[in-house]
Image (tube, rainbow over all chains, first blue to last red; front, top):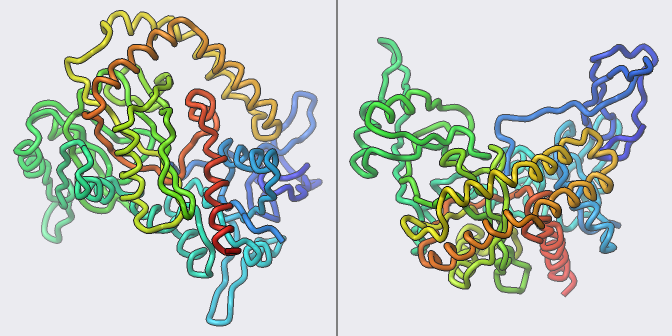
Amino acid sequence: MNCIDCGGVLDLPCDAVVKEVVECPDCGLEYVVEETDNGLLKLVELNIKGEDWGE
Amino acid sequence: MVDIAILYDRSESDELGIRLTAKNIGIELGYIPFHKVAFGFDEKGYTLTSVGRDYTNTLKDARVVLNRGQSKNRRIFAAAILESIGKSVVNPLNVELTCQSKIRSLLLFAAKGINIPKTVYVPCNVWEKSDTREPIDNAESISALTERQLGSTMVIKPDAGTHGRSVTLARGHEGIVEVLHGVESGITNPVGVVAQELIDKWFYDLRIIVSKEAGKAPYCHPIALVRGGFREFRTNTFLGNMVFHAELPVGVRRDAELCGSTLAGDSPAWLIALDAMPRIGANKTADDHEVKTHLKSLETPFAEVTKAKMDHNKKTQFENYSLSVEKAYLAYKETEAYCLIQEAIQKSLDVAEDRVVFHEGNSCPEFWEQTRIIAGINVAEPLLRCAMSLLDRYSS
């Protein structure tokens, strides 16, 4: 899979476990390992909101 | 070589919208991450690297950078770094710094004679530490100072804040003291209390887009996004209020352009979203009950909009997401209730042309969903035009 923000290649570690956080090596965006309905693992962007985030 | 780059810590739909718009109009946009990266510098030069990649050349090549960090403080650091290494930034550092503070923005507006809400700043924290006893409670003192200027109804808000967070309506002495007891100082709002008069805005406020390209005069977009509802005194869409559009009277557009120039100083190119509200008072152009009935009938089509925006795949299938949100908003906009409310808003705004007060400027506005679809302003386009105008300055 490619990173949503920078397009870098994301590798799911072979020993990855559910809820583990994986970072994109190219830009640092965080993903969390989740389990799909059919038991496979996938990476989903981890939602983070900072105190000073805003317009 | 890519001349224009976009910088952010994390993308939201607005940043993806800027990238999509750039692609659609044939502008190649570089990308500079600004979160888990290291900016190294000394007198000989600089580097920008992440764990797995070197962005130094991307940064060196970019002559203009669109600064779209989600964190306000990160945007300020980014603008400072970028300007120090000779980049043009949209928005520039002075715009970020001024827009970060409501008080600094309002002081500039007031000095130019722009209508603002009566504002009081007390440079004292509600709770102050003492070496000898429990924390000192200054709520009574601050309440006395603010009530003397604003009376017994006021809005207490953080100097730096967004989405209406911690903005509270306080009524009566006891109510004001109670609200003040909840005001905490912190890194974002280290000193003081901000209080303002409550503007009788009926049920809506305005989001106005004003921008300036290098070599041109400031330009206010003629249509504003209107945020409205009777839920409470705050009309932020973040709180679930609905959105409409209104054509801005010429006087309001002129004031908005002055607000933009005032916030931006002598910066050559910038884009700011202004928050403003009309003093409607008794000059309502429709009955409240009638408007509430129309708002009620809009709940179902607006729920479809909210549902479309909740799409978990929006960032991975952004174009599909954008189409489905557009479809939902357009269905909402085509309802009779929308038209009736919009008509009431327009009539009241036309009457209140000279009584629109400006509250603040936003340097990194959200726009992809509401402002773009409802007000018809794809903010990515003027942003990219600002960037292009700065490039033209280099080549001329």
